[in-house]
Amino acid sequence: MNLRMKVVMNIVARIVCAGVLLGVLAAPLVTAPAAASAQSDICAGIAPAHGSCGTGTGTINQTLKNVVDLLSAIAGVIAVIMLIVGGIKYITSSGDASNISGAKNTIIFALVGLVVVALAQALVHFVLSRV
Image 1 (tube, rainbow, N blue to C red):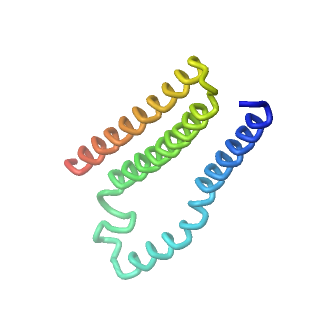
Image 2 (cartoon, helix red, strand yellow; image 1 turned 90 degrees about the vertical axis):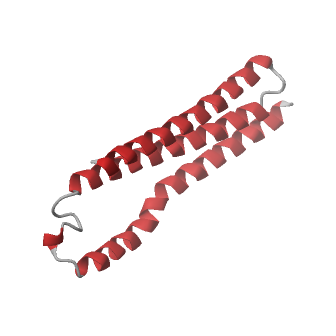
């Protein structure tokens, strides 16, 4: 692969990574107002004594569930970005054995990370449902 092609691939990789990052950061801004209005509509007709809408029992479990969901989403996004980076490294390796090995390791570790995050989230939700 010539130098011009490497430069173009580097620019494309940076644009893709910037687009993914921008999408991840902008998604909560787009969906938060709709979720907040839906939550207020649901909670409008429920008395606080029923333990719903952030009052009474269950708030600790809900808070833990929200934290685990947030951390899982962040870890999942990072793993997907690392999969993309590993794929780009694999494509641009130019047949060099050490670059191919590094790209394969990046992809394997990203997939293992996704599996660990999924299992951890399943375990936490199982424990919280039993408490």
